[in-house]
Image 1: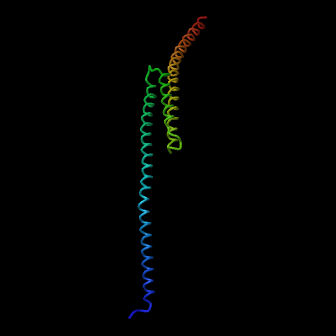
Image 2: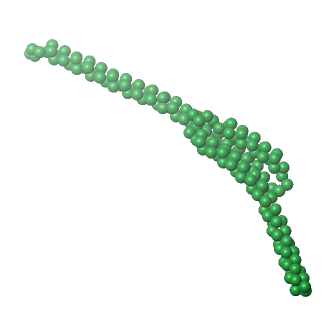
Length: 169
C-alpha cells in the first residue's frame, strides 16, 4: 500500500534538503569570510598603530635627549666666567634644531606640547640673560649704597663743622 501523495512527499523532502543544504552552505561561507578576513584586517590595523606608537616613542626619546642638552647649556649660564655669547649661540642653535625636529602637526597629536616646550626654553634663555643683567645692577646698587653712606657721613661732618663755625662767630 503506497500513499497516494508519495511523489509530493518526495518532492517536499528534496526541496527541504536542498534549501537546508543551501542555508548551511550560506552560513558556513559567511562564517568563513567573517573569521578569515576580519583578523587579517585587524592585524594590519594593529600593526600600523604599533608602528606609529613606536615611531612616537623613538621621537620622544630623541626629543628628551635634546631637551636635556639644552637644559645643561642653560644651567651653564649661571657658572661665572663663562663666555655667555658663545653659550647663548649654542643654545639658540640647539633650540632651532629641536624646533625643526618636531614632526608636522598632522603626524602627531602632541604638536602643541612640543611647540610649547620649545617656546618655554626660549623664554627661559631670555630670562636667564635678563637675570645676568640684573646681577650687574645688584653690584652697582651695593656700590651706590656704600657711596651714599660715605656721602652722608661727609654731609654730617660738614654740617658739624658749619655749626661749629657759626658758634665761633
